[in-house]
Amino acid sequence: MIKNIFTLNALDISWVLLMIITSANALVAETAEPSLAITAIICCSIAYKGRRIMDHFMELNHANETIQFFMRSYFHVFPVLIFLSDLFSEELASLTTI
Image (tube, rainbow, N blue to C red):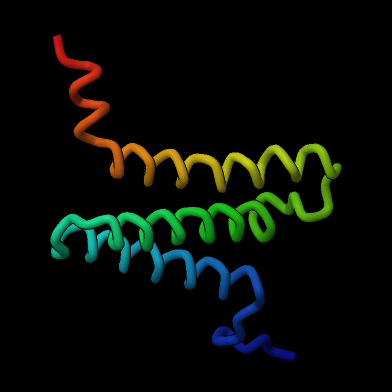
């Protein structure tokens, strides 16, 4: 039997979804006015993409629970840090000026 070249499996769908989200993030970053709402949306998409990569491409959803915990923490802590650095950008700038 000849395999249909247009059949998508779960990995293909995940890759297409990640590419769409990345393209949307790039479009928003280039066109939208900076605001906390835009930053929150981008941070949520970063966390979602990280979780999707962890589960579908790194296949860590079958790994040791400790490894899963630290990887999930990484994909959730860094978007929060990005949001907080945008929220307190002026304070951070004043702390780091000479």
